[in-house]
Length: 312
Image (cartoon, rainbow, N blue to C red):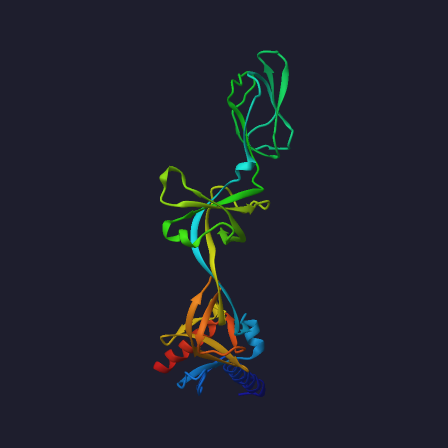
C-alpha cells in the first residue's frame, strides 16, 4: 500500500468515525432513572438527548405549562347561503316590450346601472330597468322583442356578505343561543363570528337553523359549500393546560415530553376536558414546566425505535 492510498484510507476512516459520533450526539434515547415527577412517577424511563440547534432545525417547538381557559364547544354542520339582503329578482315596473338588453349572465354590474330598456304598453314610452345594488347577474330571463309581463327579467346577487346556515338538533338546543361565538371552517379557511339568528326550520325538519354572517370579499366562502361550526357553549378555567398536539401515546399512557436542558423526558399525565386547541392536565406536570408543543411525535418515534432495537 503506497502513501497516497494509506492517507486516503485513513481520511475515509476518520470521516466515518466523525459522522457516527455526530449522529449519536444528535439524538439518542438514554435509559435513566427519572425519580419522582409531580409525586406520581417513580419508574425508570427513557429520554431523548438532542441539542437545541438540532431541535430547532427539526421544527421542534416548546412552551411552558400555564393556567388558562378552555372554550368548550359543540359541533354543528350546515351550508353557506346567500345573504337575503344581497339577492334581488328584478321585474319591469310596467308591462311592455323589452327593446334592449345590456347585460348577460355572469356580468358584474354597479348600483343604478341600466340592465334593459322596456317600452311601456300604456304610454309607449321607454324606461330603464336598473340594478338596485352592485353585484353579479346570476340569472337572465329577458331578450329583445319579448314582453316583460310581470316576469323576473334578471336576478342579481352580491356575495361580499354571505350567511352560514347551521343545523341545530334537539339535543343541542339547550346549549345554543343567539350571540354565541362560533368558529366556522370550510376548505382550509376558518373564521370566528357570532350566531345572529335562530329560526325554525322549514318543512317540519327535525332541527332549527342558526345563522351567522360571514364577510366574503375574498370569495373563500362560496354559496352552497358545506361548512363545520364549533359553537362555544362554555368557558372553563383550568389550573394547567397544554396544546393537544403535545400529547402522545407511549407505553400505554398519555405522555408529554418535558424539556430539561437538552433532554426530553416522556412524562405520563392525567387529562381532563379539552377544546379544539388545548387540553386540561389534572396531574403529572407543574406550572412552568417546559414541554414540547410541536413535533413531539419525533421523540416518541425515537424512543419506540430504540425499544425495537433492544427487543432484537
